[in-house]
Image (cartoon, rainbow, N blue to C red; front, side, top):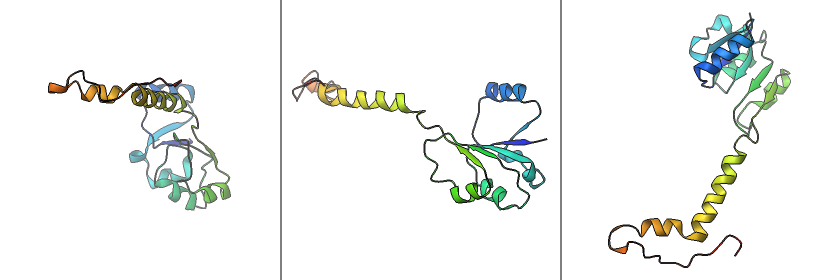
Length: 137
């Protein structure tokens, strides 16, 4: 039975859903994998030091690696390519959070929120030491 090596943490309900949708697969955490399992691992979810061990085996069955990062430069890409392993990332997964953080930082600077927050302490309460502006300005 093929194995998915679950190197990335998942919620119990996510694991349950995967097991229900793919009953012919075993989903094993890295600490549950034994050397006897190595040649049954066909999917790696996340990144784990065992990846290099799996790729080095002439009987390796690894076909797919799914990482939860946008970049994949930290993976042994040449070895993965040579073994014919498909690699997928999660490019764009943080786009909304990053754009919201950038917007928050811009507003914090131009509207003086950080300075105002600092000046709400002690004797300086509500004294704004800077002129605020707008993003359009």
